[in-house]
Image (tube, rainbow over all chains, first blue to last red):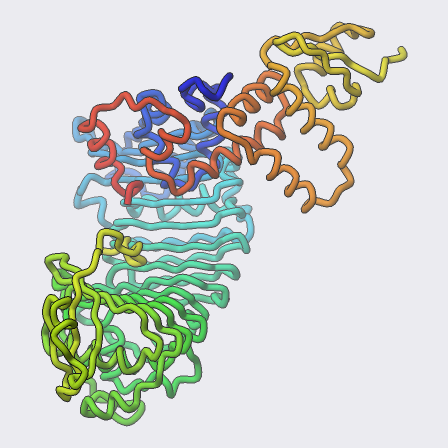
Length: 463
Length: 152
């Protein structure tokens, strides 16, 4: 075949080869191939497997045994990758609606036991997945086809999975990543993983109260949702973490020690997303970050998320930045759409109250960030607290090259700091507008900037 | 029975390749031909593969036969360079590897092609491999919406 011919250089390959290629892709990339063309779409024609059980009669254990057996038999008859929708029928004529589910054999599984919003389907359950060593109790030959599974993605998994999931996936010694999305009813997850396991992600699982992870080579831990109790054992290899806690349960007891120990587990990370209110609460509870016995020495990129910027949030961030000596990039995302978290009253203090200092003291207490060269603030509204934050960051970041500020309307400016005495007309003409600093010694000039190339968001996954 | 040590392959465009039998045996297709017919000094036609592609495939077979003792790292470096080729060449190679049935070569190229898919947008993938998009804009958007998580 000559290079000049504008021929399709892949679609005409034998189907087994295309399936082989797809099976080597991460789940997202594999799923994306379904929009390439009609031919690729046809590769992904979903195979529907519906189970017809009367759940009022059988116990969930019996049902899941049947599910495992049927699913296992079906899967072992398939070669290569396929997309599978697993649905359940409840009673006659009452068909549950299935969402798009993907099961890709051999290397990836994306399981969607969707319950179609049936009230009966929301029942509390716990998951314990031990892939650290094969579990002989669940030695189901049909399930052995998952032995080379690398990525598991659970969406809308219901209580039915309590037995099914461990039984099907305990053989996955090569498992690399695990993802849970919208699993209502899931109360606790306990994963014991082998050395190949690298990534854990959980989003929108509203009933989760506890996450226990034991994975010697875990690199990435991402969580978005209400604040559960999180325990990461052997997590010293973590490089990437998202802790995006949107709210805490009404009767939740804020456990400062537990959160400090979680932060200590994450101390080796290089990229981190944190909820602003978490730092604020910790500070209100009396934590002074640079008095802890650990620092985030490797942290290069920090994403701060919050619904607003006020004095407590700013000062607690400043306090946290005292233990991130290697920070290079700081992203502050003020998003009013995030739910604001009412602050409780803290009675106990570990240390001296910290947040009651005046701004001058906070500023003089701030240790310099010697490597911070880029700061981005989005959701900027020119409020005084935000301007003070800019002032503080200009003070701390001794080599700051770029401060980018983005308004809620997506206008983008680069900010420069000029002493008032050096102000002249030529400069003024470049500026869109300017703001005076706290002590009125400096002026911040806002120069229009191109924000058509936003940097990729770390916390993209979370609402 | 005494076998000749050499085997002659004939490409689709008529070029002859005289190679060691052991090299040729890495292709299961040729292995079956040799076992079935046991042709002494005969020419085995390879009608689906042109000379340029066949010589490249044989280069792979020779390397993987001779250097069986080379340590893993050297090997993977050589493999990596081997598949560092243009897309049309990879296409020809994988078709040839499929026809000649050389599983490790198929795996190697699949791996390479998969790496070209990773992290790319559908538009970019279509461009790389010349895939004709026969969907309407609406259809494509509809698919994207249904599997939204894959396009974030």
